[in-house]
Length: 484
Image 1 (tube, rainbow, N blue to C red):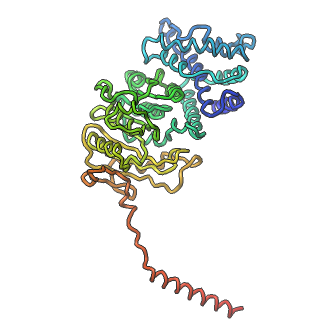
Image 2: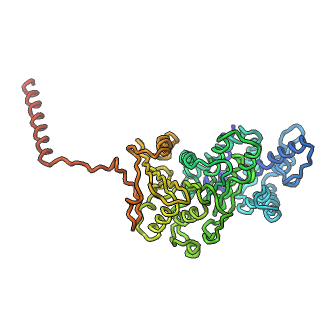
Image 3: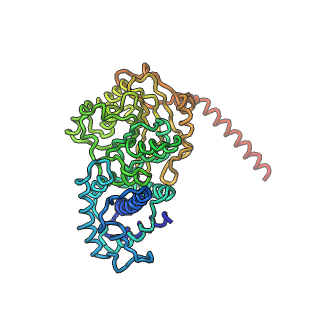
């Protein structure tokens, strides 16, 4: 039912003049979903308070509650068409009353880690793009059928929402930057192996895929105590995101996965001066796929000791700095980082090798990222001791990856097992740092088990074989002629 509802919503928004792409569909669906989620959350909190004999102070005031403005109902549970706003009346209410009311929550909230603050921040970042109040009425009626009450419902909704984010990436334009293939994320998390009590950070959070999957991983890592649940909810997952749409999608994704008030901040991570990062600001785990190919302004570059316009290289400096001593990281980056000869690339490789133990490099095949024709590697490192040996694994698949043939977890299963012992194989090998060029720190992926020098045959041998084959062919043809 949920899947068909999402499809129907997309079909409706497709006809609206204000929504021109998959990005708009996800954005507009997100804010409406969020308000429906709040309605169900308040009902659950009210019920819990009632059962324990406590009073409950509602988050949303009466005129702005979902069941009042969005889908009012009669006593028999049917939509009250006399009370339900539609057309221009509905659009005017949403644009000029509802959004300003919700936006004010940010200023009134007691703390950034409250649901009230998230409400205010989300509605400060977006606007209603649905131009027709009649279209909006149709969407509200459909979303009203969705439920956020049970774990099963939330689980199904979170998966459907992930599919929408994935489709947004496949749609092209700039959507691909929000989506990292989930099999790759899950594999990175398995290798990094966070534990409950770790503070996990993604400074380029996008759609929050890394944080959401880390939450799923930790939920099943052991039998959770009440304290474990509280730690996971409030003091485990942290993220920053520069772009408004990605911030909204990431926040909504975390909520659907079960984090009530995600610690995701709408901010430009790279605007923070590295010199200002103190011990209290550091994290145990970094999981990230920072945007590559971007160009940062000179004033942003001044925040970093290694000056470069390449966004991903600035993020890597940030991640190294913000990790605690002994902290672990899994970071996706363009494979050209390993071999570029410019000063920034050389300096950054030197910094990484000297300050961290870069123990594993996973070389991904082309097509891993749908719509992005770049080759990537995953860097796995721990902060606090210099690198002595790097274990490389080259993911060589027997098929080409693409939209209709994406990466799956089975593709990465051998890597997950091999990295436990850092064993050599046809696709894996180790390189001692002392054997790396100390001037360039070149870490190019050069598989010694596959790139053996090809032994070419001597031209005379080839000509002799051709003559032999010609003679055999002539003999066969002569025999055929005698039979005719």
